[in-house]
Image (cartoon, rainbow, N blue to C red; front, side, top):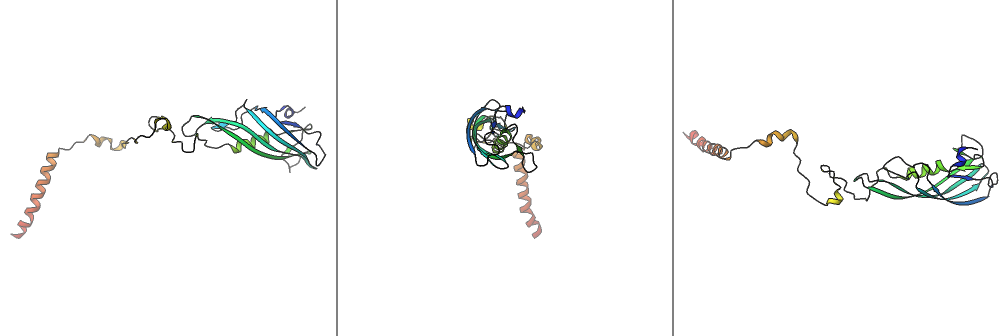
Amino acid sequence: MSSSVNSPYALRVRDLAHRPGDMREVSLDITVPSTLGAGLIAVREGDQMHLDVKLEGLHEGVLVSGHARAEATGECSRCLIDISELVEVEFAELFAYDASEDFDYQVHDDHVDCEPVVRDAVVLSLPFQPVCRPDCPGLDPVTGERLADVGERPAPSVTDPRWAALGGIQFDSSEHQNTSDQTSVDEQRAPADQAE
């Protein structure tokens, strides 16, 4: 007996095999045997998934279509808090009776294993950068605090480190005043010198 028959996603189709037009509907509640997704959010191993599946006998094989529902958990890509999101996907695939290049999946030992079909549908529906809410402000770049928790505050002024050495320079304001007074006197004297 193949290992796929022992999969919780495997469904027996002996009653539909080579009987075009026959149809059966199945509802399953399964415990997910391995995590679906590898990013910031995934349907985790051990989580519950509900499947509503329709099996239809065709000349070439068995058409498997249905709806999967589960809860995905992970963390917000902006503020890193834990989040959960309902995942609902539709899927449909033909499982052929004979191995062929035309079909990706086959009926094995009078069973169809829906696991790869469901996995693909769930993983492709998961957001690449999940967020706890659409307007999540993220983390403070300096303190690392979650901005949604600390509220609005003015952005700190950041000094370019290349100019930091100039920050210690102090000018004597009286010396600057004397220099500007001397310039003013020189400017007044210049027209008088030209008149002579």
